[in-house]
Image 1 (cartoon, chains in turn orange, blue):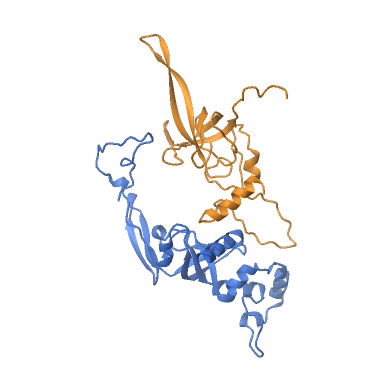
Image 2 (tube, chains in turn cyan, red):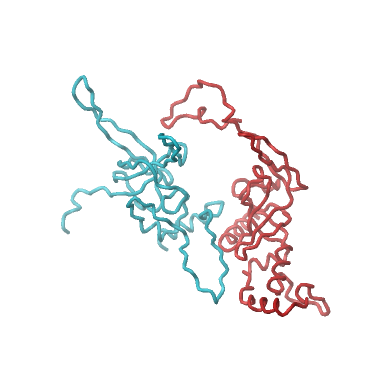
Length: 175
Length: 204
């Protein structure tokens, strides 16, 4: 059994409620005469802004309502980069963003960092600490200039869109 | 009951000091715990002057049969499974997402009128038993032609057919009785039905 099918089966057994995409009807009657329209189940969408849809999001078996491609969230607002610090949480990661802060008295910079919690869709497999990640903030726009954060959970306001694996030392050598 | 986040620790773990009293817009109300029984609904005035209908007891709901695309009002018989809490099953509490059993007769009547095929009848018939009025009724030529055209489509999943024989269908609530005062939902079919049947069986 492939890894993804195994996860799906596990979800089937572990979860107490049936995991499905809300609003997608999965039981049309199968009649011999009518041609099947080949609607893709599970349903997925393209997030736009030039972000490539991962293959896993199209072909995978997972159900995640917070996934940018399979879920009910939309991509809006700021897009930030960072480095993955930990992947120990279920479907979320901690991303570390480093920046330099200028101290005017000494005309010098100091290193600072901020950690943020980002939702990691099951479409991304094998994300390790050290990988670079592009995440977008989930925003709801109000009629005025200020935009509200629409939280995915108590601390999670970002959703991962792209992962770049850490470049291993010596990986570019010819075998 | 309040719904604020000021009493919770922050993302870093710091304990937040209380600097203001609870506000009305942060209020929460007691849960409705809708039970099965003759209809009893209380109205609640909510923010903005709007109304919420807190169902205290319900016995009927509007249920839809997805693959046939029809909806019928049907009696709710019992709560059979709840993913969150077994207590809610024991006390027959109606909440969104609760798997329940509903009366199959409205759906069977529609099916037999639409397709003129028996549904949920025992295979072996006693001699001399009259067929249901729907099945043996004389129909106009125009109507008969329509029915013949539908014959192909009159197939029912065997799992559903078994349920029709017992007279009870498995359905799941998709409305929130404590908010809208209604217990509406859809009949379980396909993978979802298999999933919940398995869960119910493993409970027993």
